[in-house]
Length: 568
Image 1: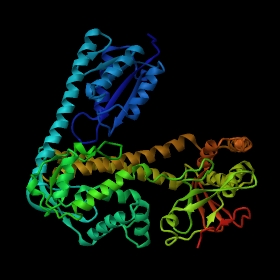
Image 2 (image 1 turned 180 degrees about the vertical axis):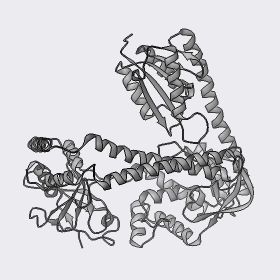
Image 3 (image 1 turned 120 degrees about the vertical axis):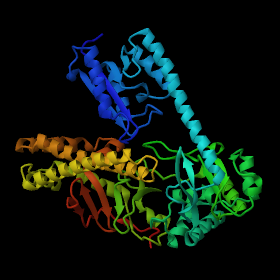
Image 4 (image 1 turned 45 degrees about the horizontal axis):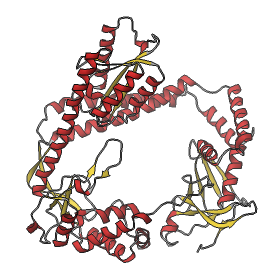
């Protein structure tokens, strides 16, 4: 074994709760175990990997993957964790991990279970423990589903953001969720919003198109709960949500044919109430909620009024299924460079490339940039002229290449920022002091709330306090990130004149090679310097990274003419 390889300590916690073993405690216990078993190992020989906010359901965690990367690079000789389930609760993940670590000659130690894979007995015992870990995970999943079935008896709303058309209100009684009693809630109809939902279903049935439905809603000023225009995706979410479905005979037949677990009796589908779907989404930390297969849903008749008849709701599902192969895809240009950077100066929407079938004198397909709101509203909500994309991209590339000129706007801006940035300045020190005080205040509040948490078990205040702790913990992490930026800046210091000249030389070399870059490389280079670009119909405004004042205005640029074809 290579004695130069290091030990790795891995710790994981799903979220900050103030209970159980914190990541800090896990690391310290592992460190003590290493020093006890390997007296010659110093702290410099130990690498720390921490994942907070991730479950043990899978191993796709950033620090865990970084640790495995170093194992594959032969830099780690042993992984130490506090407890086996800190790595994973999945048997297949364990098997794959242990097999790979064996190939790499990397030992694995779990100090809580006293497992050490450097011995055959340790490997056997760890496999047995992993089986029980997965059994526990599957038992939890079964308990959750059983809990869902119990909740389905009452058809109650479980909480969260109510869908468009409804508000959440308290009702008589209580429900038990995961062993805890909570006040029962139900959905109450908001008539104005319900009319919008009815309109969305009616227009989709009329147009058989998400795009045309979206255009109609934008043109006629229909807005979401948050005051934004309805997007195709928001419309589709409404069209596929069974909460709007009236529990009638057609609804019963639909779920019966789809082989969905319906908890209510057929006689309950009498047209009086709407549908509640439990176990509908899979919620994973760090990922958007995914809709489960309909066969995994638990359907029950709710306590709220439905909005859409079974006939219309089922017909919408058929049309959506038929249209799946024709679903909306953003058009993509293989040559356009500014997608995601270019904004409309009129309404603030993104401008996307739109290819034509014509070619310019250089044999390139001509494309222009089109405001998304203009396109969606058929020019009713925005009438921004479209700039020639080929010429606009060229102008931006030329501006990037000018970064190497001694008197260019960008280098002048950097020099100005260089002079303004003084780590000894009173405002800098005051800002750093303020951040440190805020962090200290947040930590003090967390400690106080943790003490309150222990006294609030089985009370309505418990969940509220836990929510406040997690919120403060996130804020503390954000403040610490800011402090780290300021401290790193202090360590780095300000560039000397020679270092600044070196930067200019590097940019000169960069400009010389820019024209030979691939389209993908040019896109990356542009995004390295430019934060956003605004087209106002006549001029281009380039905003480099830094403050909003760092702007270059390409005014009266003769070679960027608006394309007015189709413009009003």
